[in-house]
Amino acid sequence: MSEPFFGKSEDDSRSVPSPEIPEAPPGLAEITIRTMASDIESISESGGGLPQSKKLETPSRLIEKAAEEKTTAEPQKETELFTSGNEAVVPLEMPPESPEKPHVARWIIGGIFVAVVLFIVGYYIIPLIFPPKPITKEITPKTTPSSILVPEALALHHSFLRVSADETFTLSLQTTSTTQTTSTTSAPQSYNQELASLLKQSRATSTFFEIIVQDALSQPLGWAQFLTLMNLSAIKSEFWNKNFVPDFTAYVYKDKNGFWPGYIVQLKNNIMPLLLQSDIAKLESDPAILRNFFMGSLGEPVGEFKDAQVSGQPIRTLQFSTLGANFSYGWFFNKYLIISTSIEGVRQAVQRL
Image 1 (cartoon, rainbow, N blue to C red):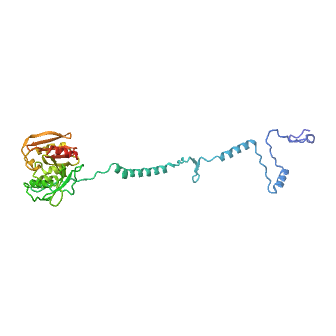
Image 2 (cartoon, one colour):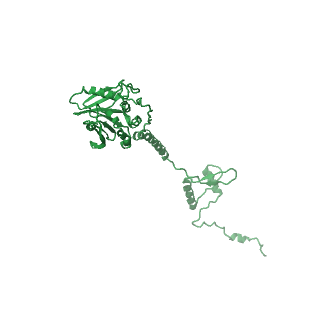
């Protein structure tokens, strides 16, 4: 009898041995199999609850975990931009932080220091090195008729002589600084008479005298005023007032031939003698007027003006017939003009300047 297609005989079931579970090949990872026994053991170890399986990590997984921990420890260099909704998260690079500028404070302090230094230099030092020039106003003297003296009176007389004269006399004329009480024709005679009277009181050994000329109010006369009083109008008063200081020094030199008056006037600052030569030469225009510079009687001029020298400086001189009488004038030290009735009188005056 034939056997069924899917069936087995009893002989076959009895003769086939029970299969055995093969062991895992060496080197493979251990695989946990849950059995009833393992579940009961797990419950007893955990103190109750649902049975849990144990997770075993392979060596490759341990290496990956160590790499992740190292990456997490490094500082974050990017910042993620989170948006609302379901928009994607885009990492953005933050702009580099501006470096600190500690030098800004130094610039501020340096600027303040420079400003202070400039202020000190401009306000204190520069005015000391370059002092401002004083503002001066030149007063132009008013012209007046020749019958009235030019009013440029002196507050105080200062002698130009550095070496004092042997004697000093004060001569007061009967006139004031603004009006004239003596006529222009009698003034020179009056002056010479007063002068001769004073010189009679001098010592016999004295040879050089300084004369201080004053008006009736005991105020010193200016040079232009004196010339007008002495009727010496060859050069206008405006010229003297413009170029010369108002003060002057009158002197008298004495020798065996008599007394010889002389006068010293001083240029104003920044006036050059060379520019005034042609004007001063007008003194030579009328020898008759020059007689008023002399004391006593005077003879006629001999010849014309000639060049001469005193103390190495050129002068102009005119000789008269009276012995020892020589009208002379010249520039000295680029600031003094000396007018004298004697060449030796000029020399004696220069030695005392």
